[in-house]
Each structure stands twice: as structure tokens, then as C-alpha cells.
View 1: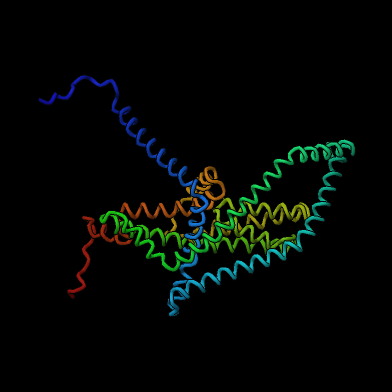
View 2: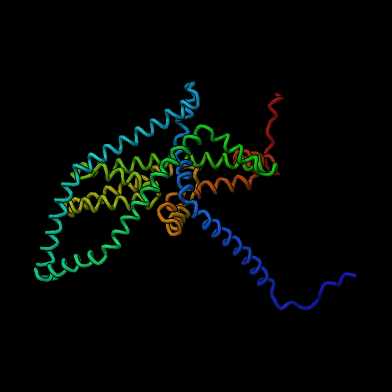
Length: 379
């Protein structure tokens, strides 16, 4: 005979029991996320190139679609798109290389003059350091370099290993991008059919809406990055700052990390202007960087992102900070597109995989106070 439920008084309040229930579930979720991140860290040399390939696929897929509408076979459209992208990349590398070769000599001379001015200021300024003290500081710096020579050598070896990983990742990204563009839908269909039947259609619809968000994000980001890089490059060229095109390319690449990246890379342009042309030109360069940032924040971002990538600026800042803290620059790069895709996908799954417009139409038709719509079959 089953025992009757205990009627003994409970010494734990309902609020504490509720808090405990939430707490252990939260700890389980956090533990699962930490274990997932720890496991993925062992696959970073493969995972990061694949993620970069996904971003490139989202960026290049409209070009492939345009060529497909021009009656080109899919394989040829993908090949032409990738060759075009490779040509643009090679042209940028060539231009930046030639500009760097020409500009570094001027920058080195300016840096030498800047060091001489700093030494003069240290001697005649408020610190009043004589030549003996300056020589002693330089000797200490040289001794520090000699003491840490082994660390520098090991760092150089580590850089060589990293360069090898970068080359391998480049080829993984290249091949993954080609096959994503060529057979992406087929690959995704195979993955979807691994899931239980009831989950296939909602997840497929949610993934499609997330992919649209990612393509809109990449399109908007590339336009914003081009605007930032072009603005800083033109400003540096007008002011006579050396390495104008490499600085513009640096700002272009930095703009892929929203809010933070373009600002930090623009700071490099200000420092180069300070070394090469002095404080006055550096202040003007700072104004150019701030002006470009204001154009991005108040015109380009709201107009280009719109409802397709509805991510709050606070979520962007926290996502970039959290991604950079956990995974470094790679985490900062992928944080915002990941947040945007998850936001769209989870919202779509909550709607049962239906698009937002369809849900709004259903809610409006089910609303008790909604006006009746005329039957188009009757007149």
C-alpha cells in the first residue's frame, strides 16, 4: 500500500526552493557551454577556417546567384566568383606591398627624428635628464633585450608555427568556400535528415532565416568597412601621412569587428600621423577617424542593417568583449554574426519556424478585435 505524502512542515521556503531549482539548471547549462567550448578549442585549426568559409560564402553567394541568373552553370559561376575574389585580394596585396615599400623609408626617417626630439625634450624639459642618464637608460634597454633573447627566439619559432597553421587554414577555407557555394544546400539537406522527422522542417526554416540574416550582415559589414577604410585612406593621403593605403586596409579589416575594431585601427593611423607629421596633423587625422565613425554609427549601420540584423548595440559591445576575453581576436570577429544568427534562429524556432510576416498575419486574423477582411471571391 503506497505511503501517504508527508504532511510534515517544510523548513525551506518556496522562494529558496525556486531559487535552487533555477540555480542547478543554470549551472548545468553553463557547464555544458564550457565543455562545448573546451572541446571545440581542440578543433580550432579546422573550425575557424570553416567558420571563415561560412562568412565568405554568405558574402559571395549573391554574386553566384547573379551569375546563375545569367544562365551560367553553377560550377562555372562558383569558379568565376572565386577567381574574381582572388583577383581583388591579389590586387590589394600588391598595392599595399608597393605602398609599404615606399612609405616605410619615410616613416623610419620620421621615427628617427621623433626619437631625437623626444631625447631633446627629456634633456631640456621638466625631467632635465642629462646625456649620461639617457645613455644609462639605453644601456639598460639593450641589456634587457639580451637577457630575453631566448624568449624572443622562442617567440619567433612560435610565430613560424602559427604561420604554418595560417597557410593550412587558408587552403581549408578555400576548399570549404568552394563546396559551400557549389553544394551548400545539398550538404545542409544531408545534415537536416540526420535529425528526427518532427524537427526537420522547423529547423530548416529557422536556418534559412538565419542565413538571410548572415548574408545581410556580411553585405552591410563589407560596405561599412569599405567606407571606413576609404575615408581614412583619403584623409591620410590628403594630409600627406605615409602608408595611406595600408592604413586604409588596416581600418577596413578592423571594421569587421563592430564598434571596436575600426576605432582601434584608426588609432594606428593617428599614431603614424603623429610620428610622421607632428601633433597638428595627428589631431586632424583624429578628427577624420571620428568623423568616419560617426558616419558609420548614425547613417550606414541603421540604414544597412535595418530589421534584418536586429542586434542591440549593448549586445554588440558585450558580445565583442566576451568573445575577445574567451577566444581572443577570433572571438571578437565571430561574436556579432553569431549573436545575430542565434537571435534570428531562436526567434524563428519559437515561432515554429514560420517567418515573422506569416506569424503577424496569423495573430492579426486570430485577434478578437481585428476587423473582418473582405472575401476577394465576392463582389
